[in-house]
Amino acid sequence: MSIFHAMNNSASALTAQRLRMDVVSSNVANAETTRATVNENGEYEPYRRKMVEMAPQDKSFRSFLHKAQGTESASGVEVTNIVEDEDPFKMEYNPNHPDANDDGYVELPNVDPLKEMVDLMSTTRSYEANVTSLNASKGMLMKALEIGK
Image 1 (cartoon, helix red, strand yellow):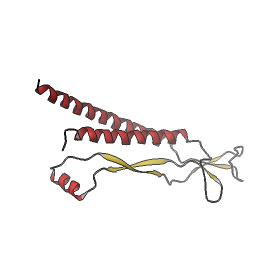
Image 2 (cartoon, rainbow, N blue to C red; image 1 turned 135 degrees about the vertical axis):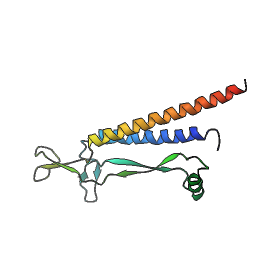
Image 3 (cartoon, rainbow, N blue to C red; image 1 turned 180 degrees about the vertical axis):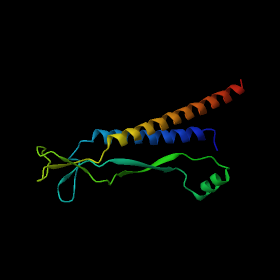
Image 4 (cartoon, rainbow, N blue to C red; image 1 turned 90 degrees about the horizontal axis):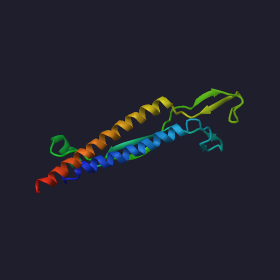
């Protein structure tokens, strides 16, 4: 384990949380977008909520064995995929909308602003915790350098 191991873990988490914040902001920005993609029938579909999937960076058997034995510290995190939420679209009665169907209903994105705010708060707290961890690691390294003075 190198002396920069903790800093590398925090850096990977900061990168992943930053991407998660970008995805949440994209979801909020497109909460009213009714024409995001074109489906196989050539019709417009509303925006689908996106979510970030993360996993540990080191997925080898050796790392899991050493973690179980308590002889190795955890590895960083990486973004494995950005997936779309498969929840159904919201339907709203608005016959004057240009995308309304024959019955007067409009399909709206499956973005719930409350869920997005909860995700954003969680992401922000995780980001802040990783910044604190990074600063603590930096402080320990600086103190270690002062030992030789």
